[in-house]
Length: 78
Image 1 (cartoon, rainbow, N blue to C red):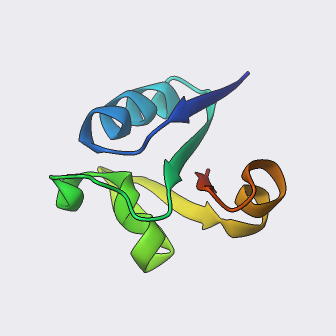
Image 2: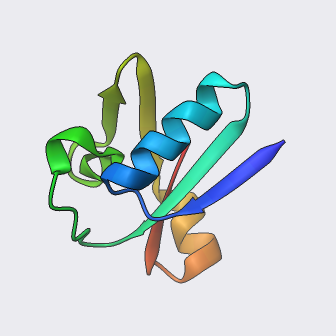
C-alpha cells in the first residue's frame, strides 16, 4: 500500500518513519522552501541535501515527480 503524507516536518517525519517500518511505501510532499523549525530531525532537509536519514530510514528527493504532479509547487520524497 502506498501512503502520501503532505508535509515533511518533524511530526510528519515521525509518522512516515513508523509507517515505513511497518512495511508501507511512503511518499511525502513539501513546499519548495520548507518551514520546518526542527530541520535536523525532519526529512524536509532532503530538499537541500537531496537525501536525509533518520534512525536508519533514508529518504531521497524525486524532483521529476514533483514537477509532473504539482506544477513544481511541491517536492515528492520516497
